[in-house]
Image (cartoon, rainbow, N blue to C red; front, side, top):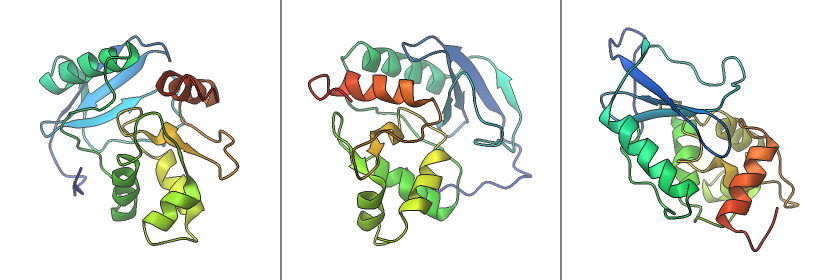
Length: 174
């Protein structure tokens, strides 16, 4: 995932579709470049915004995302191979890229991720950037926990976060 600079005047049209999953109905949003978002059934206002129009429809990135998410939920996939196109600040992009390095079935803390980014005192900023991750599940923000190991904030809700972590590492039970 590389930083993508989009202008409000960018005329790119986004396409969306929904899919059923064990953690609720997900909305998948794609641009001509790649996967822009995987959104939860109930999204907090302003958590993820789009400068472009979003139209329901078919798109090859949406089809690939649905297939790979189905494989993930079936336990047949541990890594996603999709073109990603999230829009965020340079710092957000660096956090989202770092999330991609947390292996399937493992967790990290906000503080550990901040230290990996060379900003050991920025755990709250990492938490804020993680909360704005538009590509839930695929960019695995659910793998971040408090330094105590406690489950904390998650756009899909703590029940969904717990389900995802238990799905990936059933022997650890969160």
